[in-house]
Length: 112
Length: 115
Image (cartoon, rainbow over all chains, first blue to last red):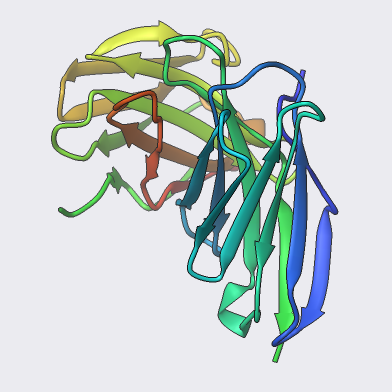
C-alpha cells in the first residue's frame, strides 16, 4: 500500500504567497523526507526530518512532523515562480535498510 | 562531484527490441536504486542494491526486466523484449546511509519510448 500520500494533488498560488503541502503515511518511520522535481528532471532532496523531531527549517522551507497523526507538512514561504515543481514526501521503513517509499506528488504552480 | 550519471538520456526503440539503461552512482555511495516514473503510476521502485548486492527486486514488473551491479561504480537495467507499456522515465538514484539518514541523489533519468 502507498506509504506516503500527499495532498492536495495540485496547488496554484500567486508569487509571494505561502504554499502548504501535506503528507500522510501509514506505518512507523525513522525519517521523513521531502523532494522536489522540476519538469523533465530527477528528484532533488530538500529536507529530512527525524521521527523524534517536530519541526525543521531550511531557508524558506519549514517542515513539521506529527507522528501521532502520521502526517507531515511542507511550508514554502514567500513563494517564487522558480518554486514551480512537483513535491514528493518519502518515508523510510522502521528498519535498517535504505529503501524509501515515495508519494504520488503535489504539483505546485506559482504564478508570477 | 558530477552527481549520478545516466545514459542514454533518451531512447526510442521498437517493440521487441532489447533496451539497456546505464547508471553511474556518486562515488562512495553504497546503495543504488532504479525507479520508473509514469503519469499513471507515479514513481515506482523497481530494485535496489546495497554494496552491489540486490536487496529487494519485488518492484521489477516481470521477467523481462533484469538489473545488475557488477561493481560499485556501474549498474544496468535491461528490458528484453521491450513493450510499449514499458515507456516511462527511468531514474537511478544513489545513497550513502549515514547515522540513520537515507537521502537519495537522483540522476537526470532516461526517457524510454517503445513504439
